[in-house]
Length: 187
Image (cartoon, rainbow, N blue to C red; front, side):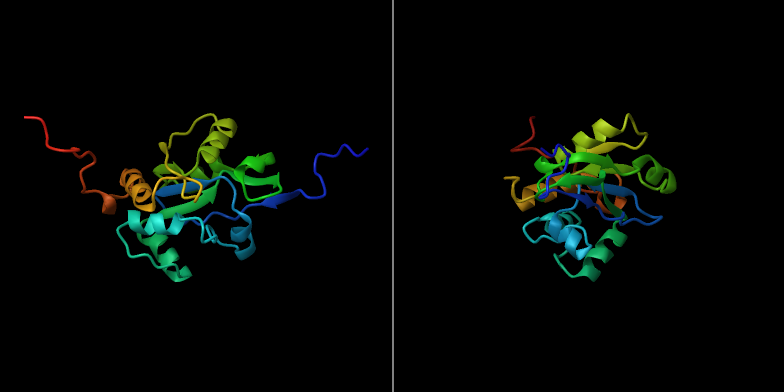
């Protein structure tokens, strides 16, 4: 009987390099790219994932799914993309199927890009791996709603949450009240 860790159906998945530049102020972190993103070599390539819709809406921009518009959005708002995991073994694109996880070198990236002022984890899995692999960071962080279609919140609701989080580090997104009344303020 073969007792190897990986079965013939499982393979080590290698993530994508960070999409970052020296002006990046916010680093949005996922867990590990899905198969469609890996196949295309682009973050959030699966159309069922609402990442780009949410990000465009959160930034107050019209949704444009062209590669040029996505790159321009990241540059305009100083947003970087990466994943907590460098690689893992898995059968599907689900974070629940991950085994033998290896983290990216987040501390080194933060040293190389001191302009990063905020980490945003867009899934509980990404945040869980962050806590598992990294003791602390001087960079503040927030866990926000997942853009996955499995998350039952609507796109607009997620975008509002994302905008609030992003506005902590992106001055262009500040200006709206961070707290609003449900009805009328008390007298």
